[in-house]
Length: 298
Image 1 (cartoon, rainbow, N blue to C red):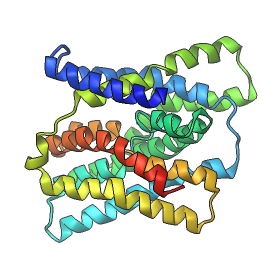
Image 2: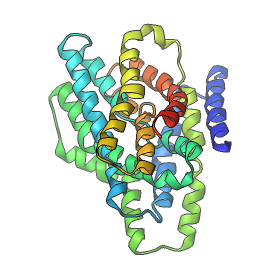
Image 3: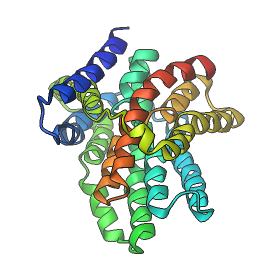
Image 4: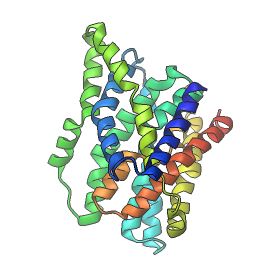
């Protein structure tokens, strides 16, 4: 209950700070950068301290790949049938096809199921979402947008991304244990992730965009918050995946759009107002739908 209150309080704090104009317009970008370069690497090191190296855990990392494939098929098909244009299709493919498996997903999982499931969420985020973004999403979007692809750039982005470096260190630490102080410091720094991420989401809250992008938001959020979790549940249930871990996989699939993915889409000028609307409306809405997911997909 304490974590759930924290989620609501930090989100509302961001909304209020935006209204009061206490922070500059790009404050959420600064917070997101701190999270990516400091908070998330610390969480990776802390959470993967004693993770069981089993196929069941790493099978959870397939979820983001499956969901993005479905999103790509759906929104590129809608473009082909002239329902939406190419820029909008790519914007929705990124925002609806990628879950916020770390910034929001981890604190929500802690609130609804407990800290013992955080390592599963970290595996989904790092081995699933992050590798997917670095190896597939960015190169694919650039190819579809301008017809260019650079393997060198993709590899460099992967190797220099702080959470990925932390992931490699975490696996090294499985064999060569560091002094206890390393984990103690990482744990304290990791505690900054949830409040900063949710304040960032609150700072981007823009309900006024609903009317402007009604059709696009309906398409994107219906897939992200309803269709995708249902398909993921069916897939893992059919595969007879561990029922205890399956609820975490489904909940992560039901999280709102990935903030990092949204930033990537904005940097490439893929309908930035729509991307901002997907983030600011989809993430808070997913806090509510995640409660429904918990009840339906047990």
